[in-house]
Length: 407
Ligand code: GDP
Ligand code: IMO
Ligand code: MG
Image 1 (tube, rainbow, N blue to C red):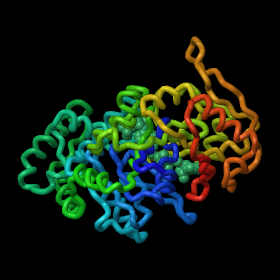
Image 2 (cartoon, protein in one colour):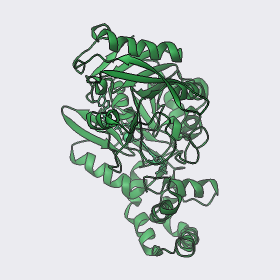
Image 3 (cartoon, rainbow, N blue to C red):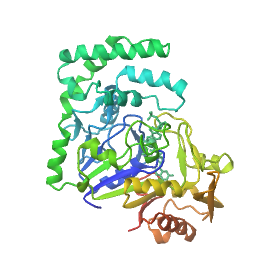
Image 4 (cartoon, rainbow, N blue to C red):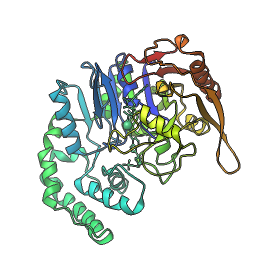
């Protein structure tokens, strides 16, 4: 593995980032998140046990790895606290290995309320975690940041003005109940200990680690097609999920990123509303959803399913300057007689497909590329050739060891 690797999803999220970050973390020293919030749901399966991480980086299951939440995240103190507590119960230690940027903007209970009521009329199908409203406040320069928890009495007047503003939106724009100020204040007071334990000038720490040649993984959340600038706007999330988001979301320059691993499922899924050219509504969709267990890890909503869209991936590969690919959930296609890949769109913007013959055998125990059925190899080789990028990793099951390293 290269020194510092960015790992990100190339589709609409849920590509299997958590599984791959956890698997590759074995050979690294640090895992950092740089954008998004607890809208993410990253699933890791180890020794038959499944863990879903929302804010905590997917390196945490390896005891020697340091984990960082960079300035680019939006942070719900309650969500983080609950997640840490749950992980601590299963014996995971956070002391001296978990660092949160002082500059992270907070998700307050009012943000969550605004997100929920507003989405009813806007119909983006958000996760309802307050992510969009929190990023709005960040850009409008009125957010409360993690470092502000240092002095709550100093913070109180600013918080009061902000909560009043949020409540005006709730009452007057959405005819919804206001959130009592004391509820918001109490959440900050209750979780101030997170600040005491974990607050860090993460940008400085990162710069030291880079000087020390530590091996670092940068873990993307969401997927590139949910990027606020380059995704299917307005049906996107509110952060920069593509490679550019890493640079600002942690404060690290591009020359320190040695490789960029783009993850794509062997097919496509999407949760929430928005365009999805290769979406299926037939028996194949049902099979993909059923075999792939395609239900959102954060909200439990069914994921929409369709064939792989190489035309869409091609564009997003450039945006991210992907240096190698990982194809996940190839095993989900095991039982299909025919599998399709979108290679272009026609004049109506409908997908043009190339059809592949299915391999019709179980591949989840296979360890090497050359042991895969010929048809599965051909499927992967076509992706490589079309995207002009090597597929270095193929995932054939949710567990760490169900990973084929092709090169
Ligand atoms: P993330 O958000 O990108 O981390 O992905 P999610 O965890 O939301 O969704 C991926 C789901 O697929 C999880 O339930 C994983 O356990 C599972 N998964 C990951 N890789 C594979 C794979 O290669 N095969 C199968 N069958 N499941 C996988
Ligand atoms: P991971 O990291 C899949 C989607 C939501 C909605 C849109 C905006 O697990 O891949 P938001 O709450 O962010 O304002 O919702 O983005 N979305 C995701 N879809 N995986 C995710 O994260 C997602 N995070 C947000 O469904 O369509
Ligand atoms: Mg997910």
